[in-house]
Length: 351
Image (cartoon, rainbow, N blue to C red; front, side, top):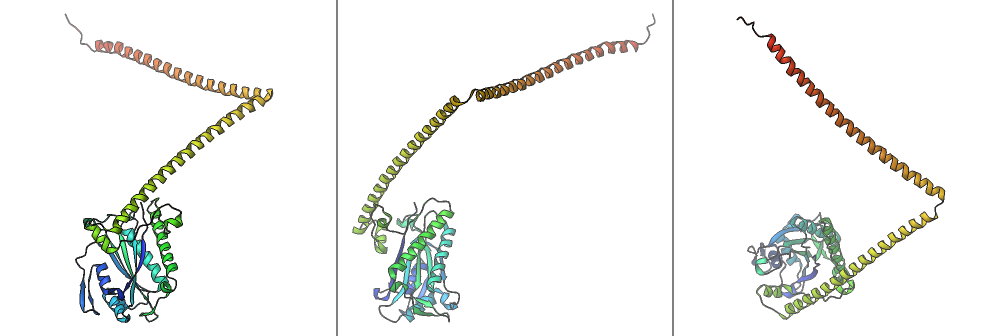
């Protein structure tokens, strides 16, 4: 079943984070972190399915390099509590293949660049099945610069959309991503659909789970339970039970509708039959006579056609018999003529 996941978080220096380190980890690359004077090496990381940088057309070429881009961000953001990047984390419908996931990511990132004029660094991660991750968990990390590109192609002013109208902006992108998911699900012929709204907004009697984050996810892979993971498992079990019950209720309703439709169809047929009988009773003698003559005429035509077919078959049989007799006569003629010819050719006998 297709699921919907779209979360937004900030990568901030006040949390002790580095934009270069985050980019290196997500892309599985080794990047030099100039601010901290160290190499962020994540080349041993597996599961990198696809990565790309998206930017406005006039962006300077050097900013399209991952290492240069995020070191530039670290240089521009001088405050100790600076927001270095925003990150969208999205989950792809499991019904899509690799090519479709890449195409979907391209469309989403293109929309982000068009709306905010920022540089976007996006990576698709495949699930770590060896570590216990769900084999359907294909997802993407999408890092956005917090500054837009100016006319000269440089990172310039801070984007204000998420700060001034953060809730509305996040809701906008959740809806955009849900529509994109449903568009691709329809293209691949799937009947599954996703909804970006909360369970409550959808009118569903389901409980929302808590976000687990990387730490709890890592503990899960190690087989270690936490309060949040146990709570989420319990919520998922209750939701599954509710969905099964609702599914059974829907099946019962569908069966009842089918029975009602069949009964209605039978009643309609009975009414039609009664109407036909009533119409026949109300017909005048002239109409009934006309109908009778029509039926008799059709019957006579059928009899004549059948008689013609029988006569044709008999004629064919008689012709075959005559041809057989003629063939026998011809054979007899040959048998009589051949001995006479043979006797006429014998040499005279002298005694």
